[in-house]
Amino acid sequence: MSNHRPNFFAHLHPPTMPAREVRPFYTFGLGGISLFLFLVLGITGVIEMFLYVPTPESAHDSIRQITYLAPFGWLLRNLHFWAGQLMVGTVILHMARVVFSGGYKSRRLNWLIGVALLFLTLVLNFTGFVLRWDQDTAWALMVGTNLIKSIPGIGTVLHGFLIGGENVGAPALLRFYTWHVLALALVAAVLTAWHLFRVRRDGGISHIERTPRVSREHLVRLEILAMLLTLAALFGLSLLVDAPLGPPADPTALIAEPKAPWFFLWIQELLRVASPFLAGILVPILVLLVLSLLPYALDRSEEGIAVWFNKQGRVAQLVFLIILVGAIALTLRGVMR
Amino acid sequence: MNNDRHTPEQEAEDKKGKRLNRRSFLTLLGQGSVAAAIAAVVAQSIRFLSFQPPESESSVVPLGQPDSYPGKSVTYVAEARVYIGHDGGGLFALDAVCPHLGCLVEPHEDGGYMCPCHDSLFDEEGRALSGPANQPLQHLYLWFDEGQGQLLVDRSEPVEPAVRLIV
Image (tube, rainbow over all chains, first blue to last red; front, side):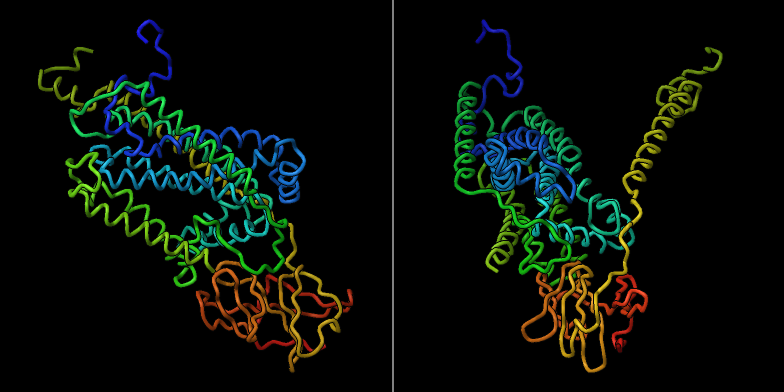
């Protein structure tokens, strides 16, 4: 190594790293896998943009062209779809790992960036879901944007800002497209870079003091392995299960069971029992707020870094667990309907 | 320049930025202009993004002949997103758009209507019975246009639930 000119990628990792924390069963590679999925989404997404037409008349047709006519278009679309679905999972699991192993301690700023990235992952997923412009997505968009209207004071203005008119139509699709492919994606890319930079700035993967160290090549080998396994999972899912595409959106047709995308089913369940403003706006904001404040209000200790289920962070772990289990329970209730 | 600074104390205050001298005044002016320019660009961008093209779609939708809605029936008219009902009193138009979050309600097996999105239940008259919706389904203005020889409904004009059109 020393005879080589240092390579740019050497910036990503310190020369040596704590042996215990590099082991796959400490981080499970979840942050790295999320990053890899984000890159896959970026690449497949840009290729899809060459054929996708963001207008109500042509959106559905252009997706059918991508799926059924363009060579390997089905694979491209399935990879984009599955990378997006998996990323929601890996990002949440990554967050859970950080909470339960005290990884947020002494690095609160990066925790906040992480919460912002979770939010962006969900919003990017939702805006992408809308671009499908079939029956399901049209209703989810209608409900989602009408929720915004329930915000006192600024609701109507914000609603107009989001959909570019009084009713969902061509301007709404174009706006969601622009948010999805550029505006939000760009913010997410910048925040991801910052998130990674902060990990290095904060001293690498959070670890117990003075432990044996291994060289960066060791971690790089593991990362390549994780990448290949993720790629195998992505191709496997893409070959077995096609990304859904319903009949074209028709704002006048009655449909039997409009369902929110799975990661928002918990909100749909809440909307059945509580007012739109409470269930659709306040509760999600509250969840994000509690998550953001976790290292500020629930566990300010600097002990227990990199210790699984450390006792200083019990309250934070419990609160996180309650939110997670609550969201999963509501989601399952929605799935089983 | 040096004449401005009289005592070491004042110079120290200058350095701390407590006293406004020519340099700190110009710095403040510069920072203020940059902040004002950014604020103006952001505000105008928000205004740009809030622009809404004029709605071209008319709220008046033709419904065809009155005899296509026989007595004791309810018919869904997709183009108008309304249920046209005919009871003892005459014809009425009930908005199919759920007042909760905008899904289209469907006829319920026990009579009335149900929203498939969040399970709000309404009776035949559109009154909210259960579920998250706390507003009734709107009755819309319905009339027979002699010139066109057909029924019309105006989606932007709600009427009292008791209003019936007798043809």
